[in-house]
Amino acid sequence: MYRDGRGATKDEAQAVIWFRKAADQKNADAQNSLAQMYMFGRGVAPDLDQANYWYHMAADQGHRGAKQALEKMNPEDFKRLEKLIKEMKDKQNGATP
Image (cartoon, rainbow, N blue to C red; front, side, top):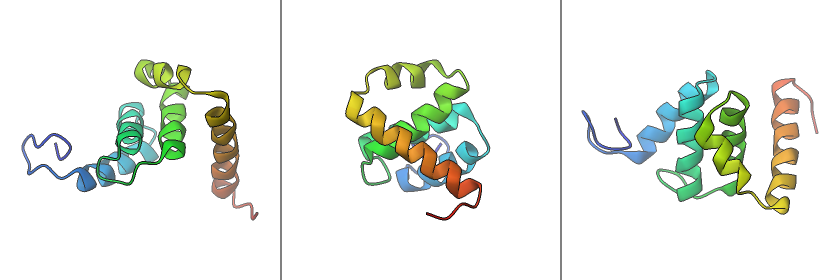
């Protein structure tokens, strides 16, 4: 809706908010869309690490487009992704750095 201006005024920042809400609820399509918003800096500052993280979350649930995006990662991006995934899991489990 907000991303494309269908049924509402186009507002990419608002789209990011709603994608994030759905992504946090483990909606693979929303996770993939959120990854794209981060990848291309739509509604948020571009952030390759966040994009790859959300692609990973969606791919983990079998999202085909997210899997294809991850296949294009270089080894350095993959190492950063592994670190970010660990940090996010630690945060969810209440671990302190």
